Image (cartoon, rainbow, N blue to C red):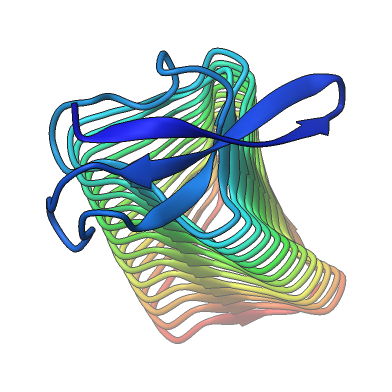
Length: 287
């Protein structure tokens, strides 16, 4: 045995918790070190270098094992934390969520409802990950951002501000999503695309390349926006429309149907580009 439950106890929400004490040296823990709180030995493995530190709590069906570490005032319950994962500060992981690999959950982040955080992903600040959502690779979700339902965020993607990723949406590669952006439905955003402001990307839309979408813009349906395109203002791209190259669409303009905008073209004002229309080269279209 590497630890024992001491007689020091406290009751939290009707659950009796006991301080733990190390019985031998392991990892950065020394013999006689006092740890955090557990409900039973079923919450913390006697094997590996896993440990509950400080005033952290593992209880109510939680299983902390291998080299996982729970620090500060973090709470884990009804969950699995394993491998080299860390949960610290005031973070909470519960409701059958899983944190593993080299993942880190800290700050005031909350992970619950079957969500999985793994690989080298980081979730922090006041971020919330829940439902069947997954955050993995080297992805980061922070501030007050939320990822939920069946959404996936992975690779080097960063989600921050008040952004929301949900539905079956996927955000990956080196994408950045922030401010009040919402990405949902089956939308996919990838490569080095950047989406911010109060934008919405939804339906089966795809945004990729170095595309930059901001303001109050919306991209939805089966629309594709890629290359070095900029979409901003109150512009809408929808249907099966494609905007690519170095094109810009802004103002109150709308591009829809099977329309294509490419080259250095600019669509702005109250322009409506639709059907099989194509605007390309250095053309500018405003009405």
